Each structure stands twice: as C-alpha cells, then as structure tokens.
Length: 267
Image (cartoon, rainbow, N blue to C red; front, side, top):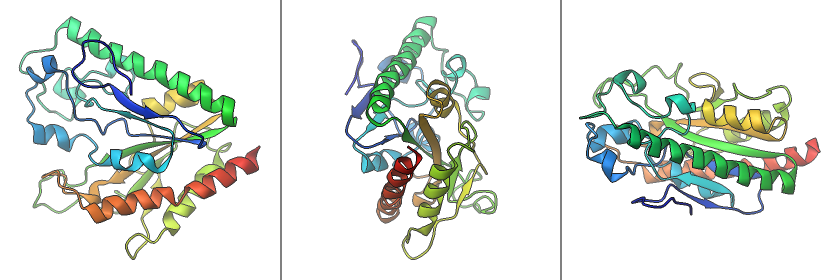
C-alpha cells in the first residue's frame, strides 16, 4: 500500500509476486480528497456511472497488481498529465463538475498523485523486467452502453462488444503471439453457457497508461487494455450481478496459462 502524507485515503494498493503478469484497474477508485469532495458538483451516482465499478474484483487473478483508490475525478491516470484533472464539462462527457473551480494548490496536489503513481510503476516494472525479461499487463476498464437512460434500449451490440481489447499503442506485430493467444482463450471460455463477444480496437484502442508503458518498455511489456461492456451490472443503479462479476474474473484467469506459455516461447 502506498500513500503520501496528509491524505485521507491511500493513493493505491499494490502487491508484488512472481507472475509475469501485472494487473491494474486505474478507473475503479471512487475516493476523493475532502477538499475536492466539498466543491464537487456531481452526485455520487453520476460519478460512479463514469467510473469502472467492480473492475477491482478482477485484479487478484495475478500476484502482481496495483490498484488506485482515488476517483478519476480527482486525477485520471489514463490521460496525459496536462489533461489528467478534469476542469470543464468538455473534459468529462459534458458534466458540470465543480461548484467552484479547484484552486491551483488543489491541482498541484492532484498532479503530485499522478507523478507518484508513474514513479511507482517504473519501480515495479523495472523489477518485473529484471525477473522475467518480458511481461504482460492487463489494463482493466469498463464502459457504458446505456447512456440514453435505464429504460432506453442499449447501444447497438454490433458496435459495442462485450469485451474490447485495445492494442493501438503497442507494436502489434511483435506482440502478435501474446495478443492472439489471449483473445483466443478469452473467446473459448464457457461464460455461463455462451462465449464472450471479444473484439479488438472497436470502441477503444488504449490511452495514456498503455502508451506510457509501451514507450518506456518497448518489446518488454505488452499492455492489453481490456474494456468490459457493463453487461455485468446496472450502470444506472450501480448494482452488479455477482454471478457475472465472478465469471469475468474466471474468464480472465483462464487466459493466464496461455499467456505464460507464449511468453516462454518468445524467449
């Protein structure tokens, strides 16, 4: 667990083990610093709807994980540093965010959290490189598909797969054996009597987190941004389906043997 002084809540939890896989869920956090909560205009339900609930339930498939606890509305670790704090509705799906704008000092404190996270990543990934040579990162997310309201039809499933694998920031040709094996094994999993609709780069291609990792660890780290459509929960009430949440965890875990086998074959 890591924190900085004078914080009301940890910045993240982490665990280091021996797997050649790191898992993170950078948008699962919901906590806010007290000073930001006091000026936040969004209600809890709206804020939760734009976060990634339950993605934290899946990180323990590996003994290597780092789990940010702060909300993306405090600092978004998956955006470039200069865009990482949402200041206007244009930054956040048109939402009115603040009763009064965060002060310069508040912004600095949020950016210090951003910097601390990426410093910690360098330490963790350097250790994994020294141990394994190559390794894989699951960048877990979730996305909304019922934005028109709880009673409106969901968005077109042809354009909204159950699982979107973002690979747009990597050397796709180099990492082809890992990505193809992962997608094959995830599709093959018996997901409560059917097979998941898994497609690549349909909704998302990956953003700052995988871009940063691939720029600092080329041909060392393979980050797959795994975005689950919120079919496992009610995105308007925030209630999850425990059977589906657990099944997603099992589906992800089922891909680990193939990933490890493929990494060994690449050496």
